[in-house]
Length: 335
Image 1 (cartoon, helix red, strand yellow):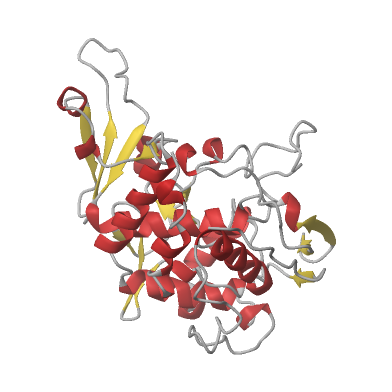
Image 2 (cartoon, one colour):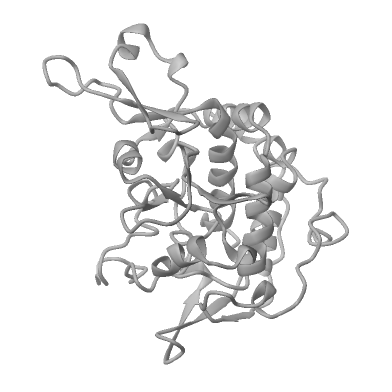
């Protein structure tokens, strides 16, 4: 497919504050309905492949008004207002869901982790959380950074043991690997949890197996993972034409501000860095398969509605799962 030229957004300034309980869309307006004539009225649903990539990135940048700080993530999970509690299980269940295991908890513990579904180590240091380092072109730290590393659609609340077990492992289906490697697997499951996470273990002699950096989540969580990875890839990948503009970040209770160019929020995000397959075509096949076999749940849809009230934007792959094969159509034929 020939890639069409995509017009850049006109330069814009996204001003926001980072206070828990901010107004809808960061400005008090009622969120647009997630329909093709509402929130998505500017998106051409007939596009495919690279054309759709560019259109979705432009749309995400235009709609994303309020970039959350990494240090504030837990506040949005634990917010006493149901309107802004992003990890609620359902409209009728105010408990919070821990990612991967699905275990429900009534409160956010100090030990609970902020899990990057797309780990820092696999992001080409795009959302590193080290202290400000002149060798890091993004020059950010954990308390300040706003972008993909603190996006409420990407960062999830998780059990610390599960977070440690997962580490930076790449997602796979272990059924696709050889029988001798399967023997090296171990399961981690939480007491009372709905889901299990399988990770590579160690050989009996203590050596690390050759397939040690892989992880498989339960079938009922694979769709969630696929749609999160696609959202991150669309919003924060550095493409030849990146929407032009910047965000003015207000922090330290409004005493300081800092401008972040959107071009500095994007980087080299590759599916082969986050999925345990060497071919892009296989990565695309897996993402499509996982999304189709595990469609959006009530919890995912509720999160989409809640985060929209905070950030202003939505995850389009939750609203329209059919966009998954559309956006990956060209990748299916790449080696």
